[in-house]
Image (cartoon, one colour):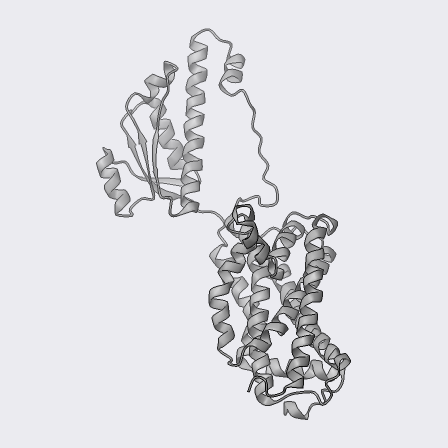
Length: 392
């Protein structure tokens, strides 16, 4: 169907034209209809394992005592580490480490058990790869657990040997009973931590890119309404916003009800709270996309925006880098993007099960941005209608 033949002088007509613009443009259809699902699936597969298990390590045991062998046994049988080499000295262990045969080295010096029994300081050295934080964490966590466990057992035996009651010895060796329960992210996985934020940023970025591509094509085809009054322009912008909110609502529903459970990501939020929050966010993000769409004159230009802006926007949202570590002025600039407020609110509501009242400051900011960007989109549309050749 010829797009110019569709009557766009009504709210429904504008919506139909916008849908046709997307469905008849392969690039825009890929970005606006499928990119969110594709990106979410790819990222979910990448982070689906949640945690790194059975990290290959080497153990140099120069003490060769019952205590040291128990530590090695714990490292070998633990879920986080796998002892694949037992080199005779640190030079051989370093060689394995530098050749990437192992990701970490545990060095147990001679005299470990003797120092523990004597109540002296006993040291164990770890060589870890700080460039891979997930591997670093897993090895450090497993080694610390096994070392402390064996140290406590030796301390209990030493106290009992000195005529201390067994119950009292246990109390002295382990004065604090620790019973940990991880909230909201039971597996302590990186995927459960980062995926809610990534999905929020994907929504904004794909909207900006896709709407810019549609806007350039619309101007190239000369699809302008016959009337350009402020009221009609407002109606047209609202109709376009509604179209994309519906499209992304469907995509988000598929993500939360299909992809999320498939990969085991936590979702403790109430559906109505998530729906209201994401509705406000999608309106703000769509209005931002409509506003920015008037800045581009070539279809490939918006794709360049995605290349350089996605990572900074994700960082400014306070995901991989805490916003407290940012300069205040940089953090303030980041709040002009709807994703910055939506990320923190969506994590609280969707992952932690918070209520909308708990994130009211983020919601108010999203409402403010939705109003501001909608007004900007109307103004940009009005200006372009007044000068139909402004991008030619």
